[in-house]
Length: 155
Image (cartoon, rainbow, N blue to C red; front, top):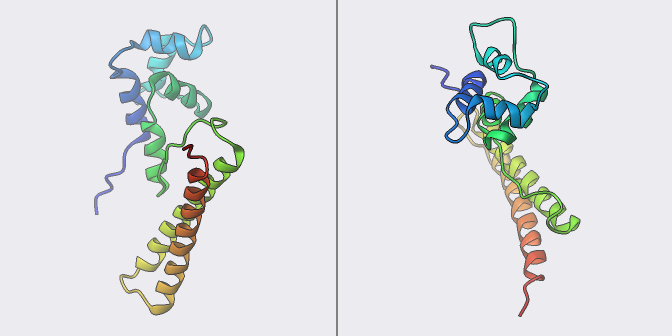
């Protein structure tokens, strides 16, 4: 089976070199100020250049400048994970944020259980019961979160 996973390096290159609004020079200046030249960034993006490679600490500010999470999605895909966008922290009460995070975690648990029971292609009654438990926990968490939000409805 051919591995069709996204290359993190290619995603970083595409994010920077094919940006529709900003040149590499502008991206470098906005991301790193005077601490890194655009020539250094070019070298880091060049797969043939072994003298300079981008550090992980530079990746997050670079993704923010470019407005892209494509490299993060490529990393997640290689780790058999998914990237789920969340609202900015602090825009609603901490308890609602906890409810959202709990529901997201329950969804993740259900997906992991689904993958585990489907591994051999056969689902036993015990495996279904375990999966059903995870789904019910997800539904319970989602309904609790929903009801907390419904309580905030005015009028």
